[in-house]
Image 1 (spheres, helix red, strand yellow):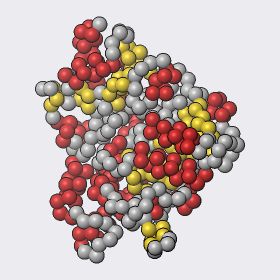
Image 2 (cartoon, one colour):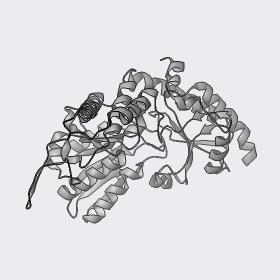
Image 3 (tube, one colour):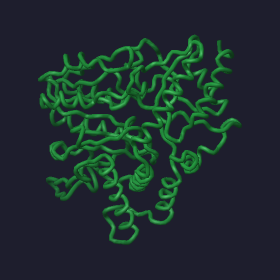
Amino acid sequence: MDLKEIRSQFPILSQTVNGKPLVYFDNAATTQKPNTVIDIVNEYHSRWNANVHRGVHQLSNVCTDAAEAAREKIARFINAAASDEIIFTQGTTDSINLVAETFGRAFIKPGDEILVSQTEHHSNFVPWQQIALRYNARFVVFDCHDSGEWDMNDFYAKINAKTKLVAVGHVSNALGTVNPIKDVIDKAHSLGIPVLVDGAQAIQHIPVDVQALDVDFYVFSGHKIYGPTGIGVLYAKTQWLEALPPYRYGGEMISKVTNTYSEFNNLPYKFEAGTPNYIGQIGFGAAIDFISQFEVQQIATYEHKLLRYAEQKLSDLEGVVIYGKSDEKAAVVSFLIDGIHPYDLGVLLDKTGIAVRTGNHCAQPLMTRLGIFGTVRASFAFYNTFEEIDYFAEMLRKIIPMLK
């Protein structure tokens, strides 16, 4: 990969923050956008904007074709069996809520169990917790080790005939741990239990093949993979999309309405009520085109080198404790420095042009399990450099004595 050429395609990376060149290490929160995504969103807003699926005029047809082409690109990118298995949503959180609401309504009964991991983002924790409460089911959490890796023995002990669904993250947003989701899926399926996987932190870092995983539901967001905000995907096997009831009601998701009854549309439109974020879909498609120029495994290899280099640089600093010790990690390093509040460190790093994330990272149950209140999180993308990490370590070396 030509790193200089890649960085040149992301205009935000050339700016300064507080008089310093921007070093953007908050990619787990959102990735930056290449010119191709920015340009196509601007083009469709300025030249082609018209509501999709409903018009007979050229503008509508152009937008409809581009939005549906994006669906097909995403289906190919994750190797879905058909583009109809791609449902556009507002993002990962919306996708999970769609499944939680519809699956809960259709299949969860009193006494059933929903199983999640201790390491989940709140978006894949709270919806299931609330569904369990609503239907008098049991919300079950399996543990993790101090390293941040799942306690698979605890998982095997807690999954049982009462379990109606397992919901787990592919990659931990707080620690970067790449979880053994294939083992979870295989065990769940041996008991006839469907699995939802939150792929928000995996989709931009590692290859994802939903058919090879045999996953029932897989969810992710456009803004995590160099695309626009406000657009996401629910992938689901056709059998589940046909079995689940509609989530929202209104235009586009119906085929016939009378005074006494309604018939619902075919897939995927059954779950896409109202005017969709069609320009977001088109931008998402452009992001898939952009990332498809590269081998995802090549990106993963480079980002892994960045991660290990950053971990080594941090380990050389006095008082640093790194959380998330798995050998299988995406490009996320979470750490604390003895005696220093993460927020204070984040604020001073910002003064040097370095953007990191501080806090509990929407993973309070995990932080409680680890006995901490939060961390500083540096998360990398394939446009980041070893030189940026050197600068990061140098600034930490200067800041730490100021906060002691």
